[in-house]
Image (cartoon, rainbow, N blue to C red; front, side, top):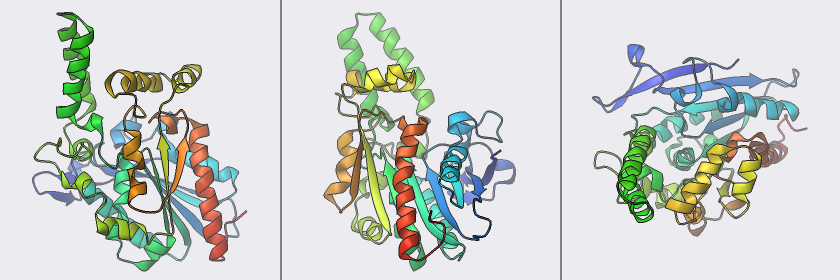
Length: 344
């Protein structure tokens, strides 16, 4: 059974990470880790690091163990067991208060240590949603050439230009316009007030949400430069140096609602409704398709489209396996070129 290990807590007072002690909680920078050994004669491993914007509090009921479909480490390990690979899988869980740029630097430092380890073959960094924006900012902080040489990056459903739902100044104005145009008073007021209450609970006032606001709509005390500087030359040039980069794009189409209902995936049903009524039918329920695709204007990238899928697609094993299939190919390609074991 996998276990959540709390690492550090970001102190708003000190504006830095501290070795938390009593400060450590389910809002701290944490990691879930598991090793899979399929070949006892082989002492090397491929490293899989998954970052999707979750905090520890999002994946656990008891404060210690991830559960169900939110135990991504267990699900990824099961995939690579079927492929008979030796892997170490980590799920990075974000600190609620830390700037996303700082969390990217922490992951870069971690990869620098891993890449120096001769028993680590390739390093696969998978970034979903805001985890994709973090992953995209990781390579510029590498200090070792081995980190560039060993690391491949996969981003999925990533808001490179920011996210409407992380932009309360913009989003709530849009919601109000739609509700008041469709419902009479006082029903419109009650409905709008209820949605504001729900949204306020979901969009916690924190760096991890507001740092990916649409440019010009972030709160003053957060980091507007994170999104504004996403495609800075430093980021682009660093990304060009990694072993491999691919980007998965998700989007809602005419088939998505039916597929979601057939799967009894009511979270995705809700995202289809959000896309239809609040987002002009140009998103995956959270992030605009053009935002996900915008990277292609700045660098060559392998673009992959997952048809009829909402932002929530990784909750389904078949969709997660679709992404992992491409990563498994990247691992085989890397190990073949570098004559490393762990290819079957």
